[in-house]
Image (cartoon, rainbow, N blue to C red):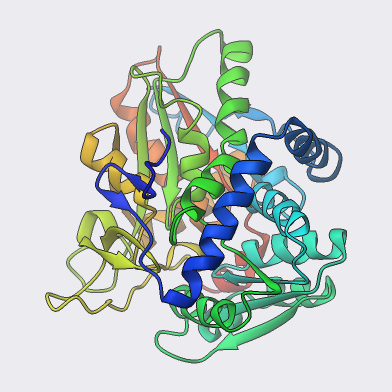
Length: 392
């Protein structure tokens, strides 16, 4: 689906920004239209994904996880095998190419778990463009390894101390910094959030996941999956894999949100399951907010899902019924993190562990002829220090 001329997917999206950013977004939209119409742009993009990122990533059929009680087969799209260890690099390569086309001299980014920050620092190093990353101070503590990697790659990391000291506050600060230097700065947004055209841009760069996965399922299994499952914070990895199957109406789409300590606990990050319609970071979507419209504090064991909103296209998929969104708690995700590591020899990111946990339950509801495809959006190296003392 394409956004309309106002940047809306159905009733969601738009461009709710300060006046200083209106011209910058219009300039970006014009450049995107030009670049996306250029075969040479896409040729360079896909060449970098092949030679630098290591695409296509494989689809792997689970050998043990979720198979002990029968049910559907599980397969995993291995985005964890990309250079930098997650799906984020697909988007940062594309946005770095746009920044270069526009002659921008500086790149900024927000990051939660650090994977987008690492991916942005990586393309900055590759293209020779200075990078500054804004990261909530709590996430700096939770993701010390990725902070070091960003610095190793030459990026400057700014801990953000305000608010909840997490991704929302990092995004707020990145927007402020962009507004102060729109002439020479390109803001690489890491998810399908923000004002138009960012949700569309990020979706277009991430849909390589779904396009590959659809082809691979037909080649490897001789059929399409019955269900596609992906975790959802802002929602870029989910929109990336969903995009390959949106036209296949017999394929059910599942977005798995971070329930934190439970939807009723007040410590959650499940914006669709527990939120209401509002405006956050430039677009109309589902937001965790008070009755007065104030953004609520969020919680998730996963820094990359610890965000109080969701991309507007996900809100549209929810409203239209094309995709379903379900919550998974910290405890369930942590169980899946350990079980999947031991069963398959693959250590998943805590973000991905939410999708893996739900997929196991879903497999028991499906028959042996069904195939559930899960987007394994990132690897769990970054989470080892956080989880090693939680459970032996």
